[in-house]
Length: 591
Image (cartoon, rainbow, N blue to C red; front, side, top):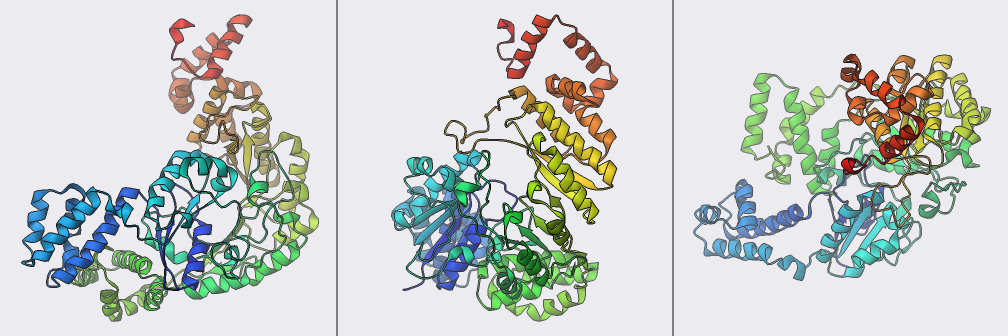
C-alpha cells in the first residue's frame, strides 16, 4: 500500500491538554508509513495555506530564480481576494507565462471551491471534547469532511462523540466512534491497538496554539471506574475497568524520540480502585518519579535537530527549531544577537514560513555549539498529578503511604458532596499525617445540593488548612448534564436548588479569585462571607457589587442595599427573591 495522506483535526476551541487520542493516531499512521498532518485553527486559513503550498511548488518549478516564499503574504492575499495590484506585483517577478497561468488557476481554484471536488486526504480524524463546544465542533466536522476522498474515512471520536453519537451523526452525516480505540483492527486490518501506543509529541509543533499544560508525559495507568456516579460520563466513555496499564515502555520510547519530560500527568478516573495499585506506584517510581526526584531539561535543540534528520516530522521540527532560534537570541549579548540575526536573515530562517530543512542543516555547525554552551539547566522538582482526583472513600493507611512515596503534587481528593465530609476529613488528615502537604479538589455545584453546602465544603477546606498546616486549593465546578438532549448544546442547566442568579453570583466571586479558593480564613470570608447569612447575601447581591465589592462597600452602597433588601415585608421579600433568582430584568417595568 502506498503512503496515505492523513489529516488530524482538533476544533479551534481553547483547551488545557493536548489531544491524546490524535497523538496516538499520529503514531499509528507513521508506523504504517503514512504522511500525517495535524491542524488546529480556522478552516479558511487551512484551505488558504494548502492552496498556497501547492501554488508555491508550481511557481518554484516555473522559475527557480525567484524566491517565491518571500512573497507569501502577497500570494495568499491574491488567492483570497484577487487584487490586481498583487497579481501585477507577482507576474513582474518572472517572464515565464506559466506563472500567470498558475496564479489565475489557483485564484479560481479557491474562489470556486474546487478543493471540494478534488479532495486530497485519504483519511481525516477529528476529535471532540465537551458538548458545550457543540457549534464549533459540528461546524469543524462539516467543513473538513469535504476534504476527504471517501466520506467513510472521516473518523470522529472523543468525549462528545461518545456521549451524544446520534446527535453528531444527525448533524454531520458521520457515524462517530464510541469509546476508546482499544481493539485491534479498528481502522485497518492489522493487529495494532491504537490506544496502547505512545503519544506523538512532535505534532504539537505543527500548530500555532500552545497548550497551557505542556511539560509532561500524559498517560493512563488504569481505564474506567468501578463507580457509576449519576453526574459522570466515564461509564459511557470507558465502560470497562482496566486495573493496570504499564507506562514504562511508552516513557522510554518518548524519552528516546522526543526527550524526557518534567512531570507525569495521569488521567486515571479512579486509580485507588485498582487491585494492582502497588504495581502502579512501583512503576511510577521506576520511571524516575520517586519522592525527591529532580529533572534537568534536555538540550531541546539537539532533540529537534535529530527529529529533523530522521524525517519523522519535518514541518513540526522546522517550526520548533525556528522558535528555539528566537529563544537563544534573547539569551545572547548585543554583539552575538547581531550575528545571529544576520545569519538567520541571510538563510531565511527568521520565520517558519520561509525556513527550510536544508538551511537549518546548513547552519547547524554555528548553532549546535552555541546551544550546547548556553544549555545549563537548573534541576527542578518533578511532580506526579492524578489529574482526575482520587476517591476519598478508598483512601487508607496503606495506599496513602504509597502515594507519599512519589512526588505527588497536588493530591486531588474528590469532595463532590457535603454528605461525604467525614470520609473527606479522614482522607485529608491521613494525607497530612504522611507528609502530603499540597492538595486540591474540584467541588461540584449546581447538582443535588443547595448552595449553602458548597459554602460548607469550601469553609471546611479552609479550616483543615489551618488545623493541619497544609494547602488545599479548591476549584468549584458547575455541574452540566452533557448527555441530556435539552442541555448538551449549551450551559443553561439549573440544578434543583439553584437559580440563574445564584450561579452568576458564584461565577462573579470566582472571577475575582481566579477560579480557585485557597487557604486563608480572612481572604475566604471576604470573598464568600463569614457565615451562611453573609453567603446568602452574596447570592442575591447585584453582580456589580460583587465584582467591584470594595468600591461599593467603602461608599456605603452595599450596606444600604442590604438594609433595603432585608427590611421588606415577608411577602414582598419572597416575591423579590423569586425575581432576582431568575436574573432576568428585561421586563422590569411590567413586574
